[in-house]
Length: 488
Image: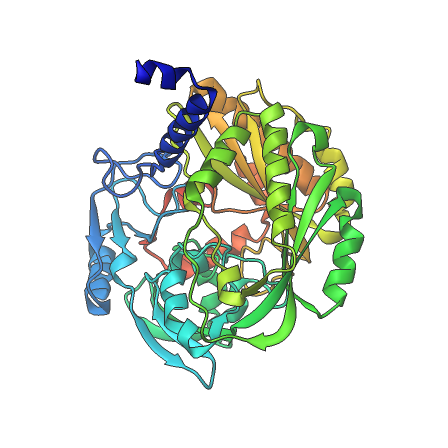
């Protein structure tokens, strides 16, 4: 009887509901999508959209072992691709019936020069490995992606950029590298090398040889104050013009609303301002609030009212960090686990479109006419737009920034049925055409939605890139699906 009376109490139902909610919340699965070098005897990369059968995967042992593999490939005619963590999405890390070099074992930190502020590290190490090594010295990275999970070699192969607005692209921070060339030579090359190897290796998608190790320029691990502010998208150009001219800010990015009620009208800026203080004591932050973040993102993925709610939750979070202090190293290691997406029959992909800084306002205005503000019932869904600054880059052959650009990183979801992929392809091709109409470009590490004509119009340097590829790799030893589809 006592149990029945207890059940009838209103407070009991409240407590029971809270317990159930906590249990459900704590057990939200944080799945990892299955992809990589041994999935059902096929190789895939992060999206799994381009499965291909390969001959073998070889885990690198040492540089002499790699040199032997390359020299034998020149004699046998085998093709080689290079893989790290495989976060590229367009078949850049494997080739049909080819050999894949798994570089993840090539991951040692070789030397830290505290006075010169440099680090020499093998290409299979991650940015997290580097951060763990340099933080005790009060040093930090100059340029890296906003997350620390990628390998050094992989990031250099796509010439990644990040939140820093003072140092340009990643290519500008590489002092020298040790390269295994397509003909089997091991040589040290630098930015001033007369043979210009780095121009083609960085942003060369693994087509010009194997990066063995690199020497990176470092910065001080400074302490920044975070400043956040809500803006209308029409005001962003002038806001950024003042920001780039004011040397008080070191790092910056922005988020644009894709929620129906504020679609492409509202955005938040996040600035990291100098304090004049440096740090050699603060530990590197780990992933926090993964389940809560995943729950919020999963709600936003539903679209409609729930996407409005998700944007409001993002605004609350962004407002909450205004005025906080953070070290440079910690500002360069955003959470990533909560973004995992494993819904059956669907995929999430990235695209990044670059548009000249001075064209941003007009571009966003035109973009409103192209994509739906409420994609709740659409197969093609846009979940996030992050804006980062990409300074003009003249250091690489296939440069995405032929002038100062804003890079819009887009998170897109669509189905895997043939007609759904065709629809997504058509939508992204339209988006690409709009971008190039405004003098922009698109980023090449992602899935091959764009046509061959769009690639060649956007990257007219592709012919000289191919000429250099054939000159330096006459047997075309280094291959991948990206090269096979767009360049050959």
